[in-house]
Length: 234
Image 1 (tube, rainbow, N blue to C red):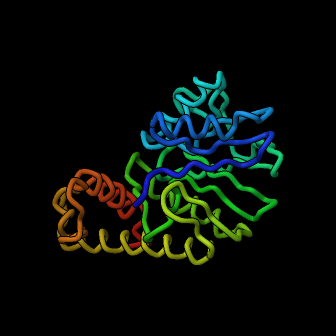
Image 2: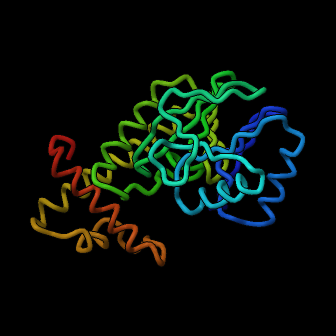
């Protein structure tokens, strides 16, 4: 997977979405890209460290404020579901999409039938990490359901290439999460009282990348919570 992708929407009135980690070279490139703009919005989808530090650095360098999810630490211009940022390339509508993070926004670009998805979906594969907080799996499934009702021609994720078949991508991500829920529910039926660490190898087997065990355990904890509170889905 490649690094965090930053998106610029507009020319004279421009939004910079997800400036990424704080890389001096990347900050210079973004600053140069917007130096002739009349108005710049520095926008965050969520606060993870591969997204937020660059936004705060860029905003500081340009003397601007950071726009992002309401409740996210450091955001000076909070955005709620349905709020609109107007660029000279069309409006961007904030869509509340928690799951990967508690405070997570996607941005709908209606004029282009496009969505900037943050980490709700990735450009490759069929999963993103969901394990940050209690209730995150239910939130994530609700967020995917919101996308399934939207008329989209493209999804631009913060990692990986753009998705040119949004309906297929959303279904793929839904099926993966539902399969994981069923897998964890079945493991719990066979091993009542098991802890999340006990199920890492059962669920992921030998395919778990090095260094990802803790993240996998947190994901399983979230899946266990969901399976136990929604037994009909297991």
